[in-house]
View 1 (cartoon, rainbow, N blue to C red):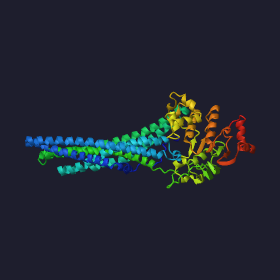
View 2 (cartoon, rainbow, N blue to C red):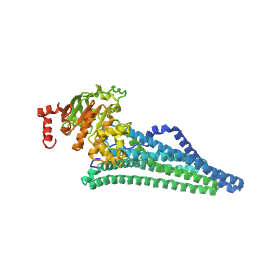
View 3 (tube, one colour):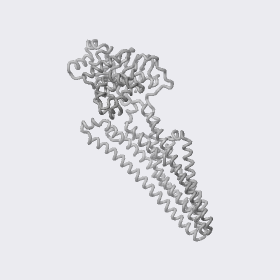
View 4 (spheres, helix red, strand yellow):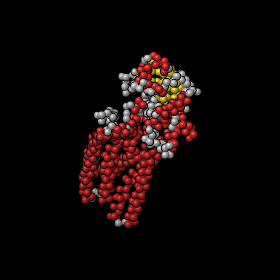
Length: 596
């Protein structure tokens, strides 16, 4: 998030209509039977609720008749209706809540499946914390709506319609007076509802911004503490959180105001109508039972209107959350699989070719990361990519793995444009050791097994030995079964890198990609790992990105990058003899000067 503390989603369209909830239908449609059962229970409870006042009227009027048998029958009927209402309500609650839990679980799965496959270009535009906010906060809102609010809203709509119809049958005169109140109730619902919808979406945006801010700070907590940046970080988080609170307060106040206005207008109207009804009873044009029936239906109608006014705000919030979720599900990726992917060659030889490749990162459209790069790597060849920081070395690896696609030019694997392959098929041919190794919050064994999930324990240990990781792993409290903590907090930088190298060794892919793979190793471990890498690279195409030239002197070929272009290539001795950029870098490193 920028220093202005504005949420990254500020510019996205606001929720304009409650109809956005229709985006949930594809998830609901999978469970038509469950949905039908819930609707059936809902209709049953609404009908029983509407039948209850009829029974009450009979009971009240039977007092005047003096027929004890009939009175007992009416009471028994009322008790039966109450039992049916209780049963139907319990069934409705179970079915609707189950449906809500199921739908939200499906939405979360669909969202995660979508975002885990989006290219890194997507994460240049949106913070991970905001994505997590949508996975948690927004889906929790949806759960509340699908699992409760929609059901309650539909039930109250049925009660409102049925109640109005039965009011008209009971007393057309009094019903006409009730209907005069309706416009006065609807106006504040519409006017304040619009403001409530806008505030709800804005509140969700700020909650997402708060989550993103916290995720960023906690993900770099050691850096924050090392630079004694706790106070500014807290202040920044507090600013966003307070802004979220202020918007939430406005939303709550608006909803409270709407509730006050609606309930007062409804019950004030009912009191007036009942006064007229009481006069009719005294005049003998209406029985006491009819008046009681009318009172109960009036309460049902009033309660329905009041509940709908409150639920409207919840539905508004859910509409905004649904828009945000559907927006994420429908996000267009810049890197996609072809409609009919080509099959990988059998076997994959590992020939790599960059043909006049031009590329700039989406977040930096005016700055070329690669400018007309042409590079051919033969099967089994080890090629080192060297040059100053920002010269384009790591970009070569990112493009080869199709994290991004070039704006111009073609990248080929075994003579086939890599855009013709499915991304998973393409990446299955490669093993990557990144500059910043990722360690998952699981055991050392499972972290290495990440390279090949079907690997046996003995294969994992062989890979660890080859990466010079076996000794320090066995020294851990539970050896290979030791939990390494979030992001591998139990390990040093060099140990993390050796775990990542073991993972790549276990993958046993025809193309090996090493991005500063030994940068965090001490001299002894580096020699051991370098020997392992040399053994591993035999018969494999290997691309090595390195700043430390001592690690690439034995490469078959060294390619020198500068400002997104290849400026020289050859063996170490030949490049030193050319006295160009590589020779200058070599002098700085091998004579004890500062590295470029």
